[in-house]
Image (cartoon, rainbow, N blue to C red; front, side, top):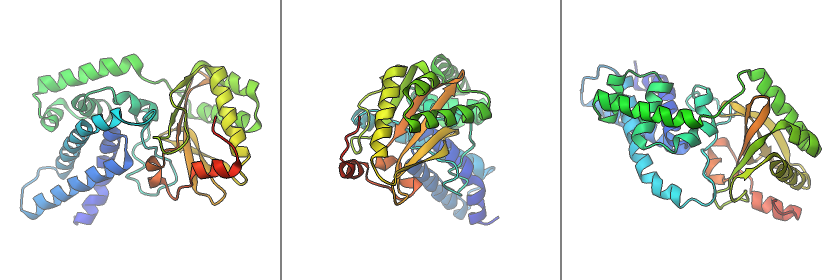
Length: 308
């Protein structure tokens, strides 16, 4: 098998690990690229590898652990809420980016993983999502097997306490999402409130580079009114459109400017027949991998409206 074929075969799995570890497409791609360079070097130097896949998984995971350690200080200085870089299904034919779609890929789950230590995050993902045996996990994270089991157990207890809930039926999720976006587009406050859970949360990530809510908003009335304020602002911008997409395995939408350039991405957490959370990412740094970007600030200024 050629190196190019090996790359194509192993890259999706390596990216799936790296993206869940880092919550960043660009950083995950960098980690995968560096791991492949090391794999190539090892093969070129005649190193005997029992499994290139295991070698790659180990290097990628260790690179991600190092990256998370250095990222913690940056996250503390981040302006506003931090959300992962979204993956939008259908916008990229590259299978590496369309990593196995599951609840473990949701924005809500990736945010929850941020509360784990880098080693806990690695051990938990390798065991609970990718089904690695404990002896392999121990070798990857540089711990004894007993310590690896402890890392997974502690992470599991923490995650179970706050694990996001999702509607089991994909059809039901899509049906509710369709109703949500229709009510928002129609400006129907009452219908929109009925679709929101009483304790619904609205999250926004502008990173200080685009208008967004400064902190999470709670409660169906407040969230519904804020969403309709956003819709009215968008309606005053000629040619701006909403396109339904799947975001990290959950129902969502992209907002596009008149030239079809991306303004933002929104994802919904749906469970128990209602929208439990809405997450909006408008930080341009987190959207570049999805294609040409618009300028939300300029759009709002041109339309003479201010974000709510």
